[in-house]
Image 1 (cartoon, rainbow, N blue to C red):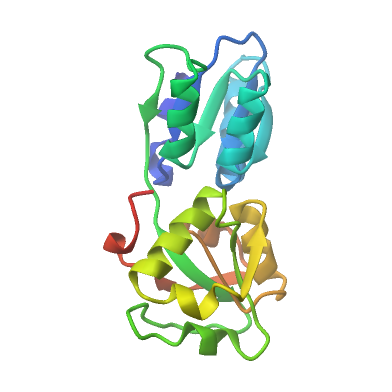
Image 2 (tube, helix red, strand yellow):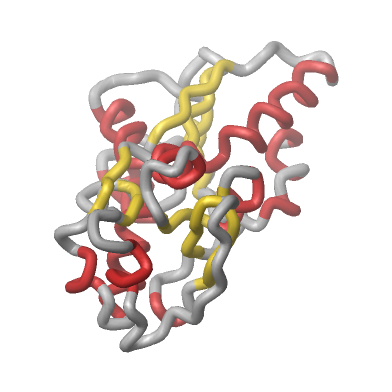
Length: 213
């Protein structure tokens, strides 16, 4: 658990499950890539075996565990998938923890910075322009996409963009679409926006617009 106790400052909600596996494999939501690589290095310097990481959408990793993939730790960005693994008896008893939390933000390319207020009536389609699409994690199964759809729905903005999405396999994929200028805007976690110099935060979603992350 020493690896995890140093994780607090990141401000991201993760759910921890320790599976009965010998391999030092860590399954983690894609949004944790940078943080866990740093912690993995610190863990190794302290004299422990180097962990192996598998980063993807929490849903993808949970399905792999259901299909028999072996992992020592699993960090999920969504309680739904941890609940499913628990229901199937795939978590070591007593090891699940709610660790941290995060926020949801609207980002735009760094070379076209803007600042807006997300509220009912906001012209999100206008922000995207005539042919632009909104980059988000696939709202069918990626946690960041599910949160994004919920937030947009609560603000009455979902109908504007439901047919104008650029869905990505995970939140980092959505982030890169905006950073590369392939999408004029995207919705990601606040921690993802903070580490990518190719984007700037245009707005923060009101906390009550979506379930706690």
